[in-house]
Image (cartoon, rainbow, N blue to C red; front, side):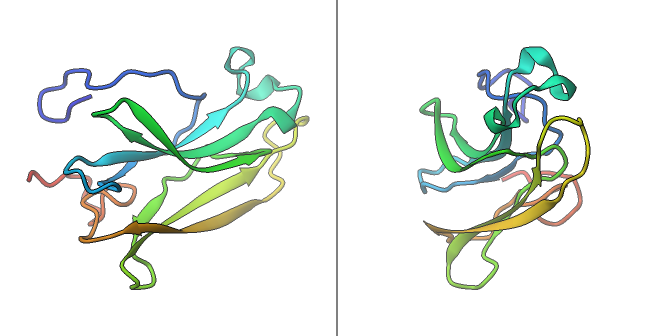
Length: 150
């Protein structure tokens, strides 16, 4: 949804239920922010608790380029899911390249929802970062939950 007027700005069917928020940054420097979001892929019609084959579940981290209607795959991992964490983006090591930090939950069915471990991953990208992201974390880069009007 467009944050200024509430209209539907982009519509697509990508993945299944996840409760993480998106972050935004202009990764291709075209003047428009891309949304970076975690997507779980599995047989959505069965529901989260009733998957039979965990090897078919995949967690993907994608960037959505709204102007082109394109998805850029940043990361993909089978047997993992993300149901609880928003990625963090910024320049963690001061090298002027975008870093992405996110969590993945290891998943084996059955039993459903048994915690079998998770990992925190960092992607050191080759995308230059010219300025700090305005929405680079859950509740925004400054933690206020208010998107700064530019």
